[in-house]
Amino acid sequence: MTTQQNFLHLWDDRFLYITPAIQSGLTARSSATLLASVSGHPFMLEAVDGTRVQCTAALVAPHVSRRLDVDGCGLLSLNLDPASSAYRMLARCMGGHGIQPIDARRFGKLRDDFDPAQRGLLGDSSLQSLSAKMVEAITGCPELVAPIDRRIERVLQAIRAHAGQIPLKKLSAVACLSPDRLTHLFAEQVGVSVKRYALWTKVRRTVQQFTGHRPLTDVALVSGFTDAAHMSRTFQRYFGLPPSFLASRVHVTADAQASHAWGHATAH
Image (tube, rainbow, N blue to C red; front, side):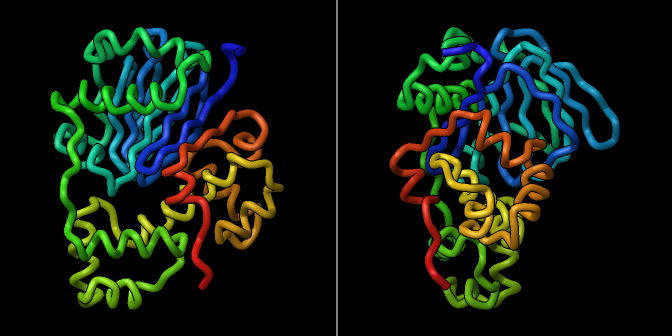
């Protein structure tokens, strides 16, 4: 495996992007992001107000705009779905900060696996285990399945099943709640709004399509975008990368659970 290859590993409630270098424009997305330098050398994060910080690891809260400059030190970017237990655990560590620098030494011996991960030498189960242990290293406790309100769980399933394209009125019926009550409870339980999670679901399902070799126009239409240009604008805003980069320069893999949860949408 070449050390310059980019990898994207998809699981049900998270994905791990591994790259030797990246310079992104201003991006923000619904996932919480745990960043870690592969080599231990610092990378640069810049907040929307222009504040710049050099760090060897960092936590970025959902919908926090930032620029990222990783020049050759290598990067693990672990993105956690806002509805996941791991995200809710990490949210308690943020202390209200949008960007929280972390000393990468907190990962301890896990750092021994960072370079093999970047070189594509770790299998899917090893990478999934690494992602869980990275979260544990920050939170100080093993990942636990934190319960979520059953009504919100039903809403999450409906949003996923329809690739985010389901009206609030129908979601309210699914939850047996008024639209206002659902909106409040969803934001309280998940940490992002229904609208933002619905768009995230569309983007996450789109990413799943890159495990195959479909034309970008087909990927856009299957995922609910009006056209490839609309998809490209959304991806640039979320990831700082065009979909064509994912299609041509990133090795994308997904496990069975991710394929089941995000592989197709219910007809509507």
